[in-house]
Image (cartoon, rainbow, N blue to C red; front, side, top):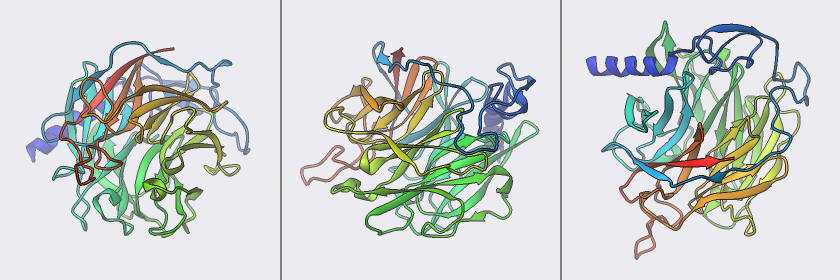
Length: 409
């Protein structure tokens, strides 16, 4: 019990320090009062969002000329602590003191763990995440900080072989600057994946909407934070029939990717949503309305081809002051930068199968830019020929790393 209390205290210190108003350390994210970088509240004019109309392009604007980054120096591998495997979701802390890291542990016995990469690239445990009460597993992937100051984490479950609507959305509740509990707020999904907070809503990619369907269907759910209650979790209606579903994606492929759909997710300050369809190697985009819906169906803004070298699109981030998307390419062991306005794709790093040491990619699944350093999660799943044996089977290699890559613009 004492160990758990200390873990919660650590989460509190890292999570709420210098930020008490819930808008991620940036003034201007909400009307009224927001949290400045120094942790104080400030009154600002309304910016961002649609102002009650679908299709507008409010909020911070990307540069007039978008420049894709280049690698500025040698990449470095950061080895996870012993017993930790399959890193995935990442998010910079509101206080600017580090980067949250979700360690899935799908190839190791035990539960998923929330960890922290500090300013010196030291990785420490923050808190163990609770097992599903029925499946006795936990497969955490995406992570987001809501406008309510709480932490939200997706529990995929499909990775652990439990695809019968067991996936969840969890909330780490923070009150009076203390993390007091972890609760389930959404149930009934199949393969919850990325989580992104925008204004007072949360968006989650559902990599599988209906098991066994061909062609494969996936989607994006949107929830108002105010409707999420820990004592009565919101139960999603199955097979794409729920009213919270705001987008549906179709995967048409003739290889192992045919059963994988919506994966990474990013939203610009002005409400443009970008979704990665892993199976088709496509990035799709659409504008969010003030009601939290899309004002039109998602459209392809970039696609992987033999010419541009992008083989798949996994986790991604939108770099607001650059107007650039950065995405993990699991299939090609690489990372790509994308101009969403033109569809231009630039490969930043790429290597053959490796164990993730010496700054190399090992089935990367997520990215996160902190300053000018790009952090990449090497999830190292036993799939897509990873460490293939003589029998043709794939398996993780036992080395688990995050890679830090210096970038220049």
